[in-house]
Length: 74
Image 1 (tube, rainbow, N blue to C red):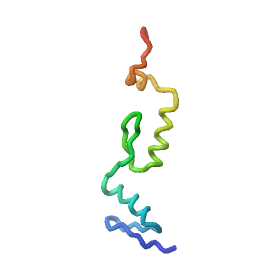
Image 2: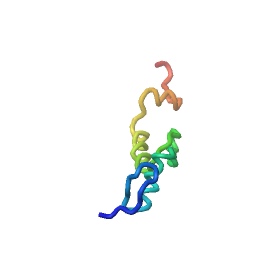
Image 3: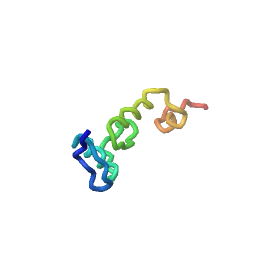
Image 4: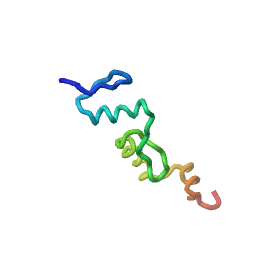
């Protein structure tokens, strides 16, 4: 298949323009997606979505301490 959209930085080619624009973040370091829970930034929305699942699980002890959820006397 034809890949008319080529990255000027590394030469990688893409079928769609939006794929090239998404790829360009690799070179710019842009991380436009931020986790609303912990503030960590991600290059791709899919990565943020995957990351957010860790916040729905039971927090680890270090996360509990960070959130001020330590139980008294432990």
